[in-house]
Image 1 (cartoon, one colour):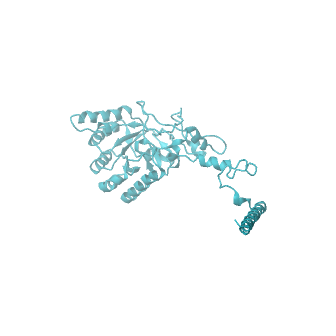
Image 2 (cartoon, rainbow, N blue to C red):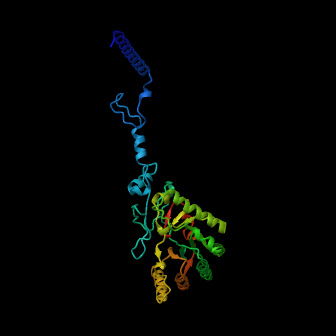
Length: 349
């Protein structure tokens, strides 16, 4: 290599070194002049050990994002703590009713309720402190009149629903129908018929395929809103009651529900005895016996207006109960002034 070429190469190298040093000096000066933020890591990165012990997201923000979970993942203790009033007193009294045969009338899956030991207490303290328990008792009727509320799920089914309403009308009585929204249009006028006889119509769900203790919030809202819209379109009256399919609903959804959540404490099990074959009369008698052996003043009775055996059982129990002095009323009439959205009821005790 010639001496001239060597000098040229050395000159280029020397120039590059000078440029690198200059660029480095500019960057350092820029950094220490207050532009450190340009070099900081993205928010959320733990920068412990860099610039002292800085963390760009606060511990509180991190914890809040980690605890954004669904209701079914939260224990009852945690949910109760959310219901504590401003004075520090927890007023979230919860009671799941149990029928006289010892079986629970309904359950909140994944939610453990605190059971009340006083079956005749009122939840007035809960209302006064502006908290909403998932279950409450109302006053047992004391005017000497025995009242019960028959409720019918899963309809409407025109040829059964309307005939059940006729049977109640014979005894000056009324009942409550919890309807499935997508069955209303193909049983046209069934709800208008029962409403004109003074009966009550509530929400059961739109498809009866979505359970309110397991579904997403969007599914839950859709089931309620579509059913309410179908009821209003048919009878021009907005519903005030909700009977969750299977009686299953999370505690938080009860508390935030725009409707009163209605369960039951006498289960006829008519769906289990719906066969109309050779065992038809035996099945009807079984339904009748279950009701007559359990019913007391203030009860809410569960039946279904889909089965002919249910209709036949109604024809038998109504005159028997009428002779015993019972009046047949809607759920709203049974619970009266104590009925409110955001509460769960199983009877009028």
